[in-house]
View 1 (tube, rainbow, N blue to C red):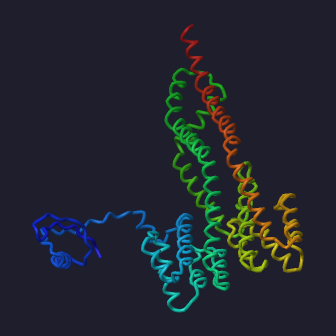
View 2 (cartoon, helix red, strand yellow):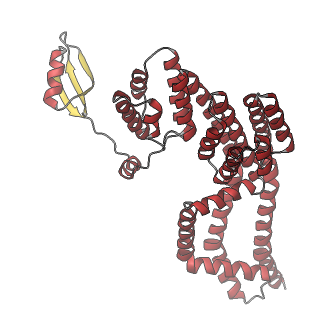
View 3 (cartoon, rainbow, N blue to C red):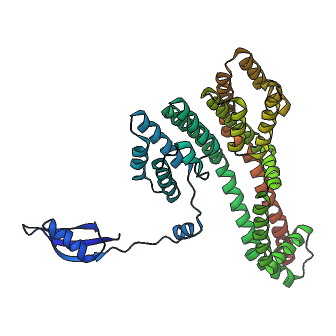
Length: 407
């Protein structure tokens, strides 16, 4: 129902105003009269339409952020620990949720719970919100009667992933901003600055060095074919998105990002930390190793790493030891492999996987802190090279013109 802004006078003659929800102005007037308020004006409140939200609603493009999922998980853990029934807990959470995708999912989960289905089965209907690992942990909590512990473990797991992701984004923010600024600057120079110098050089009939010729030819190309260049960039982006949308393309792209210079090693270690943390959490909750490997491979977020995890699962199904299958993947360092072996022999694999996750996360934190120091020299070299080409291409001919004028 729409909201209405009203002004009126109370029984003692004081002016009152505010907002009230109602189906019509007459209905709002009736409610105000029942409250002892004589309405003076009732105007329907204009709702501002967000075009982006309308587009997202139309094409179902809403996504749930990791912060929203973390908050929901923590709330569920706290409410279930307090002894509140699941349906009441979800109903209470719905009152404070604003994300349309999460609201829609929770309402459907409520309906499924009221029809007699379990929470894990209800959540499995919404893969855009809940991962395979999330659903498996809920299922384990339902089977063991420790659902609040499952939500607490998932909240801790999500929070750790969130911090690692934020640290990586923070480290990459500065170099990304500089690169974008360089691209914009080069575009402005090629489209607006160099053409002005080109007409000046032609008027003086100068013999131009190769740097100037290169700049002029590049500028002419961008000026004459900028629409084709812009269209080619858009087409290449669309083609790339479609390619990585395929199974083979996504696998190759995920392999590339974990092998890329500078950031690849950091991303690889972060995925390894996620694998170790997920395995420790699932194993300690009582999930069988084979099932845990299958769940982790589908929720780790990288097809290349998932392929290796699936290889470990197949090796375990054949009866091989976990340490042997892990060593065959070549994903783990010798130190981590020693931890694997000790944990498997001592029978405390979940604790050792927690140590491995902590080990990788510490390395990721250190690498992220030093990432800017590694990237900055490369950026300075690129900026210096760009300035050098512009200086040689523009100022050398200008110097020749000044010498001719002096003679």
